[in-house]
Structures are given as structure tokens and as C-alpha cells.
Image (tube, rainbow over all chains, first blue to last red; front, side, top):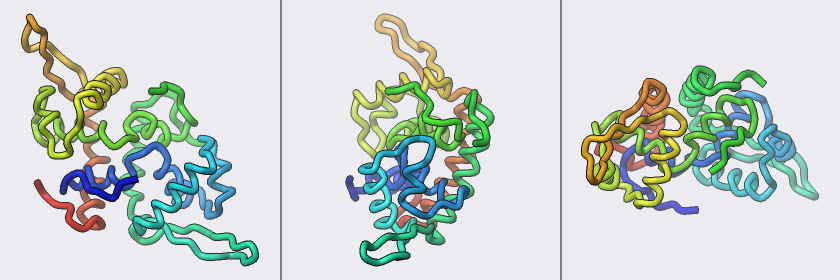
Length: 110
Length: 110
């Protein structure tokens, strides 16, 4: 994980944050599927592993895209929610949906 | 490189194709900066390496997002252009620009 920006290009900057195969799937689960807990994300069809999930949750929180709040103590457990910054990824993700449905055979509703 | 789709979710499907830190920067260079040759992509601010560039060009062609045509023989050299499928990534990329300019400090025009 690097925090070095590759350039000032906004597209490169966005890819520095969420340009990987998993981060936006966690955002998707919060934004479109009303999932907010660790176990819910683990259960997604794509089969994310625990180490990747933990890493991406930490990154997304560090980037200000999600925030966590405890819903249980001893042991502590957290809910994860999108910040305003995270919620505003929706227009980009809706364009991804449109493009995927148009151009990728087999893409469709769950 | 895998061709296995992780699910039928269109967002996951798009990430299977271009969910990495480099592919969309090559698309950006063709779409917004009128670059079409190998050396032009190599010269981008982000400092893509030759092996990553060659791999991503091959993938993008395989996915039908770009196509190459020879502009010289002996040795053969190619121009790369977006297909209609590739050009239609523009709305998604414009949303990335908007989000990056709004939320990432230091992001701006070249």
C-alpha cells in the first residue's frame, strides 16, 4: 500500500485510492445492498478473503470513504458506513453498471 | 491474468476488466490526450513501465476496448485506438474526474 500520488491527474488519483479489484465491491455492498458488517461483506458472491477484506476496510477508512462505529463491546464489533465522500462515488458506479450491462455478456442483476 | 468472472454483478465484471491502477490511464491517454503510440503512453507522468504497458495493451485489445493498426512495417509498429466500447468508458471516467477534483487534495488539470 502506497500513499504516494503518481501524478496530479484526477483519474490517476482516484485509481490510487480505489483502483483495485475489491475496494469498490465493498462500497457497492454498502451503497446498493445495505450491508454494513464484516460478515456481510465476506458473504458476497465474489468470495473476498478475510485478509483482503480487512486490508480494504482499513484503507477505505483511512481515505475517508467509510467510517466505522462500534455496535458491540467485549469483543468489539463494528458497523461500517459510507461517508458523504463515499456516497458520492455512486454516479461513477452507476456509469460502471451501465457500461457493464451494455458491453459484458452475462452481466446482470443479482 | 484471469478470464474467470467473479460474479454476474456488472460492477465486479467491469473491475475484472479494468480494475487495476494502470489500464484506465492508457484509456485516458487515448480518450483525452490524443495519444496513440507506445512511446506516448510510456511518457505519461505516472511512469508506467514497459512490461506493464505491454501487458495492459494486450489485455485491453483482448477485451475489445482498443484495437491496433500498423503504421510501419520492418519493424512493425502500431497505432492504438479506442473501439466504440472503449470510447463509451468516457462517462464513467468523467465521473471519476468530478469525484477526484472534489475530494482529492492536489488533484487538478495537467
